[in-house]
Image 1: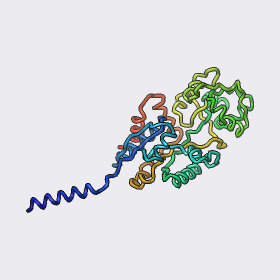
Image 2: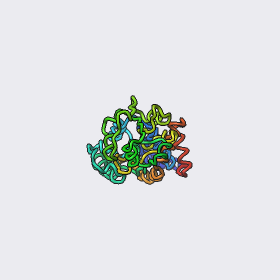
Image 3: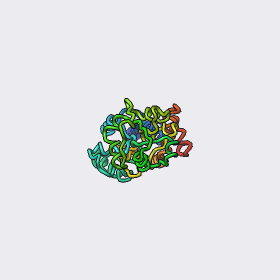
Image 4: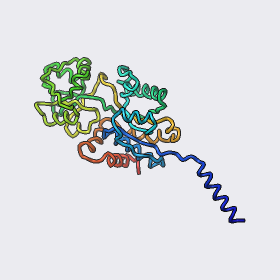
Amino acid sequence: MTHILTTLRLVLALALLASQPLQAAVIVSSKLSSESAMIGEMIRLVLNAHGIQTVDRMRLGATPVVRRALLAGEIDLYVEYTGNAGFFFNIPADPAWKDLRKGYELGARLDAAANQIVWLTPASASNAWALAVRQDVAAANRLTTMSDFGRWVSHAGNVMLACSAEFANAGTLRSLEKTYGFKMRPDQLIVLAGGETSATIAAAAARTNGTNTAMVYGTDGGIVAANLVILRDDRHDQPIYAPVPIVRAAVLKAHPQISALVKPVMDSFDGPTLQRLNARVQIDGESAESVAEDYLKARGLLR
């Protein structure tokens, strides 16, 4: 009889366990860029360390691919950039995107209402288009802001800008010229085929055809290695593209601690920090995974 009761208890316990739904692993993804994958890997490592099982779907694709996957429930979390919400919701001209806090609040509100997507803590950095000048040129001409640059160009400054055709012709350069009161002559532009920022940065570093200014993204890893100085957009001409993890509301409900776990990671980032981390991947050739783990341990966010 004792043996039978023990067996019955075991069967009952197993039945109860089987009846309890198992929490699915959180599918963490990223875009193709090394920065997106690196931050995504940091988030994944922190979640794993605190008992939240994850699935690695890094470098899934370009923005439209990753965005569709999130909305379809094929992935659960990835790092977006605040200014992109202007295009997601067809309001790219809204001035809110030029302010980190306002853009974050607007994007978070729209995504929550339309898609049940929650925006977590954003980084205090922007990966928007910017201009970067060689350090020697910046020092000699006292260039720290785009207002300084506008005055320099307007007073016959010896500027030579390497950029992409999209930057030169799709409105970005024209917008900067209008905001800061300068006009670039055609012979002051070197428009590179493809127009990757790695090529524009290399041209400025090597002074190719007199290049001393490069079109860059604000957190490009090559900026520091090439001895360039980003010119601060002091009149807020460009939208802010701050990295921000976004997650499906249903997943956050199942794992509410995600928000608190992600916050100190994102709070630790500013522009120079992301530049240095990106340089380790883009210039030094370290893997995004190893840089992510090393950084978290150095900051005391991972044991």
